[in-house]
Length: 237
Image (cartoon, helix red, strand yellow):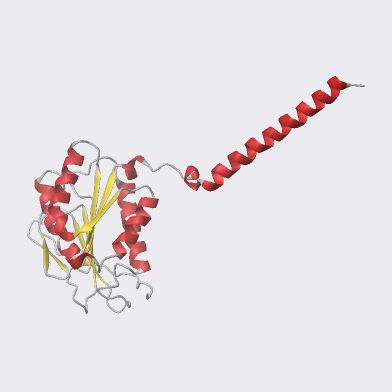
């Protein structure tokens, strides 16, 4: 009889079973928690904030929520709000910028939210805060840009209610008016169109990639006219 041998063999088998049980638990934890596999956001993304302004009644600009969710999935902080909040949001952004929590500011608006962008930019500039990028989607009223973001892109439906943004005398920054008439999008669908959403996100990603700390304010220079840029026709909804 070899009781000691049987005891040793039994203990070894028990140890092996415990090891496999621990491995299965670890594998289950990874499977149930996929966020553990996500890469940490870059420092530039973490110190960026994108403010998305909805239009009238807060119900016709829900494509901005989709854009916001996609940006958050990339680790980019966002705020989605009605356009009437533009002034208080500018105050919050300025406070975070002065505290060093925020370095890159991006604004996106649809309809009346797009119309409010020049006012929000002007207030931020008055508070000494630069705006890296602003994107308007079909601003519904004649809009004049007198103080600029580093880049302002106005995507509008030329044969609909949307309007090109006009450059005021002494405009600082780059202004692009992009007419997407004939592409199958309308005023209510422009923010929900997949191709438009991809372009907005790509422009934001490019702006973040260009960020190397706080963007300096552009020096005053001679007035320049808004220039039109041809857009690739988005896919129909």
